[in-house]
Length: 491
Image 1 (cartoon, rainbow, N blue to C red):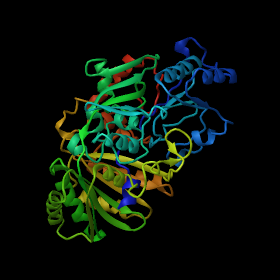
Image 2 (image 1 turned 135 degrees about the vertical axis):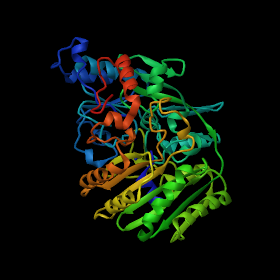
Image 3 (image 1 turned 90 degrees about the vertical axis):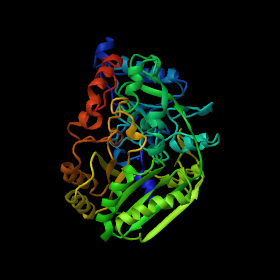
Image 4 (image 1 turned 120 degrees about the vertical axis):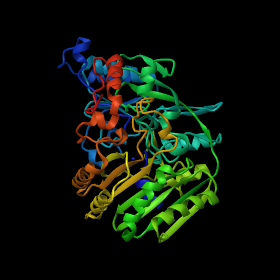
């Protein structure tokens, strides 16, 4: 996931589920909800911590990243320290017909990292280990910590830029990131995952064990098939890279879009870039990115881009740097420590000196399978120029992402040239994102990214999953036949 807020500071899944109503299947009447004593018993049975309304930490524990969902008040938040804790929570949900929501980083665009029932938060399972080219990462680990811990061993995994996103939601939905064109999506380097299924089993899924569940966990979206507790990834060796940001005045916006879309998806794999069309608060065109290599190689490729635009940028910033520092730049944390690059607080996933704040926003997405025509570029620029605080983000795909068959993993958009994200701040946000998305639908078609999940999307199964939707439904029927996990947009 590419973080619009972090990227602009230097120049957000996912992992959720809503489930309810397995009470009839378990033999408990649907009306027989848990009593206070039952919640107390659940708390005693957990190695982690159960937080209920009235507890001192409740008002902090119930919040997710997007402040638009602050009114949601869960019946309880369980900070699970182990797969056994997760299984205990799922048994409780089955027994009493309680809606259950899984949460890693709490960044679901639709607010589906929280809900009215039991929130199963995997943040305490955040250990990052490394051995012999493999990383074992707890499902609650934040991306900034994954990068920092693996960086100590001189390795990394391809992942997103938003530092407080949880690795679970990112991976399960695919995982577009700043080195995807070089090393693939996050799900492409996933070798195995530990998942607690609806019946309470803890399964290891891989190419040889529960291969259908493994396939579905590589782009099928978080919260559909179980609660992930850990992942094993192949790593790549890190090296120095070059980070860049180029700006053009708004009058060059059409030329910049035309040039970028012809250049970025077809550049050498080492070059990843995105195009930001910003109205926040003034109109601005920014092309930024990361090149896996030195400054000279980066400059040569950028010279080709500038030639295609037809004019020099009004400003440019190009800097060779270490891989680890590049990830902090992309996170909007270039002047912070890793500890500061968190939300402040004392709960798992937070730090006492954290400096990142929550946000209020609305977002929608497209996946672009063909370049925009002149009319499409005009329509896009017209939407950005409308009054308000908003941006459109185009993130380059191709490279390693496109060399995998659309059906090889559950992530179907292997042939897309770039992803598109419409992002607006809360004042008038929903109206603008709705209008921009509708205006661009004739130009981009009906393709969307599940990690930018959109509760208003119609035909979402096809848009998120394409031809993979039918196989995902079969996996769902095999591993959650009673539909304990019931996302509003669940397969």
